[in-house]
Amino acid sequence: MISNASTFNLCGNRFWLLPERAIYWKKKETLFIADLHIGKSAHFRKHGIAVPKQVGRSNLNRLEQLIEDIKPEHLIILGDLFHSDINKEWQQFIDWRKRYRQLQISLVVGNHDILKVERYHTGLINIFKKMKLEPFLLVHDKSNYSSADEQGLYILSGHIHPAAKLNGKGRQAMKFPCFYFGQQYGILPAFGTFTGTHIISPTEKDKVFIVVEDKVFSVN
Image (cartoon, rainbow, N blue to C red; front, top):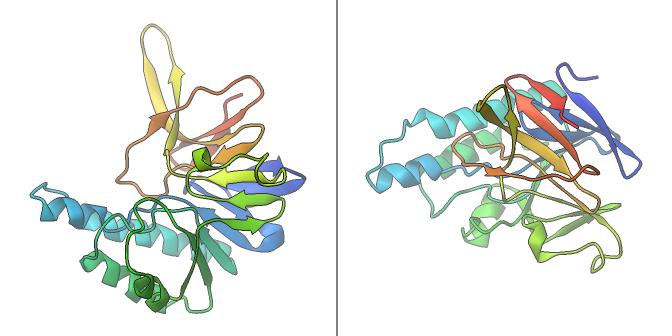
């Protein structure tokens, strides 16, 4: 058991939900993350919006620590690795990648992944529009797919940066990034810290796990 992780059985497989906003499938030695949005801070600075340079580097530092702790064989990114056009933060990522050549990295392309294919190949990244890893279908935006279209595979995705709102006494309310698992699909929280969130409205049958600082909690 990884410290501070929450275990969850999905489609007969055991997963670890990590407070770093990632999922680890130990049986496959595979780490899943979504929505890093590397380069977003540099993109904003380029357009005159003051964003600290440390933002982009901090995401890579968090990913590096996670890989050092878990030592996966395969990292699968469910879209939006890089936020926009090429900038200096891409070179930071390439330099980081060179230190982990033994790690297989696959990217399921998201709507922000607009770099030329050659750039991803330089980073030794396998790219896919969608990826089957039975019993799962890995995509970026689940709204483009359905389990009926994909022979009943359970869909894992990113894209919407899910968050859950918890109401306290009076009018107090707080929102937290969360893992969402419905009957046919699951959604990972954004790994990148410089991202917005979308409040979800789960049903009683859905499972939701919130991330609060360095812990993961089930809320239903």
